[in-house]
Length: 435
Image (cartoon, rainbow, N blue to C red; front, side, top):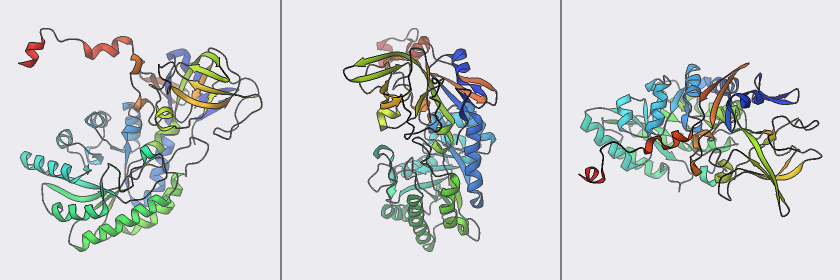
């Protein structure tokens, strides 16, 4: 579900024609719908309400501070994985008690709610730092339940052999060794099996295995009072493949409902990112040229792999369509099944100097010409947050739409921005630096 619709033959974000945004800020530009962000966050909050969860929006999916602030106003906490993301969470007004984090010094200063611990070495380091500072904190050990989320190999994190967390057997030993000391109260377990996961079964399997571990640890007298089930819920890329929040909740809530109350209640944490942000954003780009080479047709646009790397990195599918399609080419639905008589097969490519610079390959698209606007859908998550300056290309602008109004939430970068951090400091020589 999203608020990008064709009205009168042209694409609107909520009540704003995207062509009006292009006229004001140029292309390429990320455009986000506030109504879509709110809808998906509220849907998750309502579906999982029986568990009274802390919902920590995963900042890495879409990190703009204005979007973080919008979700914080809806009650979101934050899942952060770096000092920069922590700074964004704090700047957005995030409650430190509702922040889960994996790095150390800055988080201790901010007094965040939970550390997510990936390894024994990391836990031992956190314990040593807390002892040195005379400070205590809470932590959750990330556990790999050895389930297959059936997603891309680069984003599958629940198998035993992944770099994240520890396997169930090792987790038991970590709790035995470190679960009773005071500097770091190791009283939580963190899961994150992958993304996007368009099936509820891997979550059910992972949670059942983890609850068995919790029961075993508690039987030995250890305190386990938090379970973070992670995120990874799907979004609609190819059509309507992602289950709604209610379907995930229908399978997960019964497993945990009797664990959130009673003498040893579990605090449940969720970390949705993609399921909130992905369908809430598009990348708007403009056709530069049409080209034929051999038997292949190319649509060359002004957005490249540095703006949206998912197709090149993950072979990810994004529905692509003109913002003002020719008469008879307004799509009734969006996704892989969209096909209309008169479409031609084209590769949609950018201007970056790489053969891997593409947004789509062998895609059936309606007639287009130089100057036409093209929308790349489901680009709200892992789009701008993974953008780079490759080929010294400035990052796109970002725009947030609210009803019939829009505002720039990140200005388009200029060439001077690319070189600002490279200016030499007056009086600093190579010899002085070595001294």
